[in-house]
Image (cartoon, rainbow, N blue to C red; front, side, top):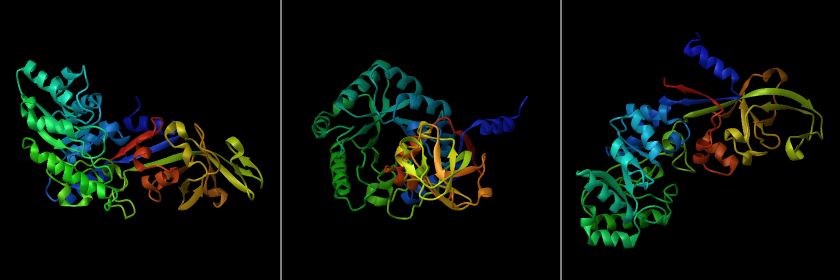
Length: 374
């Protein structure tokens, strides 16, 4: 019978690319964010499969780091998390999904109530269960997405009896522009949140997301709610990142070939060699979440050398101009870095014209995933 190590080696040999997740870096990022909160408790947002990195591995690592409150987007994510962490507080940001109330009750999922209609359904569930039920309440302080709008806040403040049977554990809202500390909306949302909180029953409050933690103590309230920063995205764009890189993406070289000046590469002949060079073909593409928008704009790294993409990213393949490397430095079977020590998530996002969140959550399932926890 093959050993676990042997099976992992076999899976890595069959894969086109290797995605390594550093769980020690994840825990270090959680510790860094707790430091920013200066004693205020820190939750962990693990929606979207822990931002693409694997809920089954990331959530227990964050629990070991000290997280006790977790946020997901969907009730199915909450059920997966509950199976991993029986004692955690699990909040469902998407609210109380109609028809799924029994699942929330059975597995102690706490809905983030986003409307008076949801408040009413959770109060009814409490009456039918014959006990109080925990929940969070979200206010819309300026994003116009989820959360009670002003008119529903007014009604709830005037009729607090609507909350009968609901044990509100948390009042929250979400910042729209926290990554820009000078944006006036940050203060506007803070003041709206404070004003609404003063009119509602007393309960702990949470406003700060990853970037919001760095806006100062006024935004911290009773619970920080970081997400992307845990996984290595810079919460302070334009400044050196305080976070450690959590992911490394290495793709295998399938073939290296010499081409003459004027030869085109890939679909649409989007790249044409201006000099004799060599082209390395890598075993990943947009089917793996390596975004097509990186075509002709991105970089890979091998042996400390930056290597430009040549031509379009296709479904399964990426091509690099490796003419700057001596031929013996890169051969079929070697690995090159797309994410790694020289190039982080935010760097790749800039090349793709997007944000680090999309880079992480797009990471595909064909990669061989290796988890390290030094």
